[in-house]
Length: 261
Image (cartoon, rainbow, N blue to C red; front, side, top):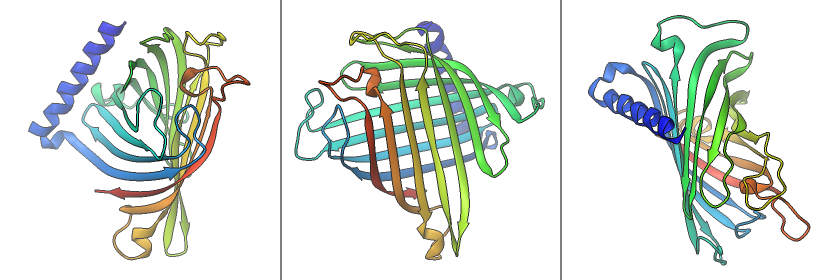
């Protein structure tokens, strides 16, 4: 499974690299930097500052998304990572509608895709995810994706052949002379309920952002500068079982500033 996934990721990377040599294949792209400051995190030190780089694009045969988080722990070192940590994900998807040049639309479904994700971080954090993805047409939403992954977690706490459901969405609300955007994701690992610290336990991670388009309000250009909050709920964080002696249920919010370029 890991070898098949690695080959698919390599193929996706080579195809994406081809975009640079064939600009007509690139349909759109977006890059952003986000600053977050928040308190009351669990498992890691409670006070955190995070800088995030994100890239998203659509191309001739699919789309890509990646992000890298650099997190600093304010005033207290993490027992595993020290004063800071780095974490990232790469998520290419191949569109069957685009590949076969055919509309795969039925009901609310706009397209059917092969979705993949590679998660990586410090201290043996590595996971491979693959499964079907769907683009949905839901009234009012800028976009709504629904991906189903078979998840394989490497390292000291394996969690092979469990399923993860991951919706991703964006919704824009006009407010006065500007807009409020509500977007985010949810990762729900649904079928591993072993109460063991040696395995990756079922968990739910829900992260919406509520952002005001300050750039548009200041006539600096729309969809370029946002301010707002990010809410972060994570039950059994990192797949670690919550107990009375070790709280792994996270429920917190951070202020954010986000710049697109």
